[in-house]
Image (cartoon, rainbow, N blue to C red; front, top):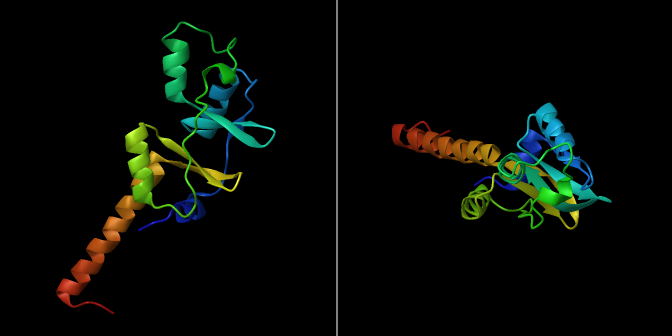
Length: 145
């Protein structure tokens, strides 16, 4: 069972963030540049929200607002669901499914350590399952070292 800390070790600890007073257009530009679906909203080093493509689609496009004139703080999700490095991929998957979210900031104390996405979690779960299958095949065929 893979832990969140192992996912971060593998993918890296990059954190893409934007201040709450930045424009939504600036946030979208950062997401496009970094090829990510969400950015953390940080104020004085503290996590105050998250802005995702879904927030943009539902709170800008569908409401006829302009991304150049709207501040991140106006549309960000403030109650951010987070995980700790010692949590499992299964816990992440359950949270993401229950809350219908695709990105989980990883927090240790008050510090943001990184972000795991649904893609990261699925990749880890598949890897775990592949490992178990390989071990079972080796057991069945007598190839255990």
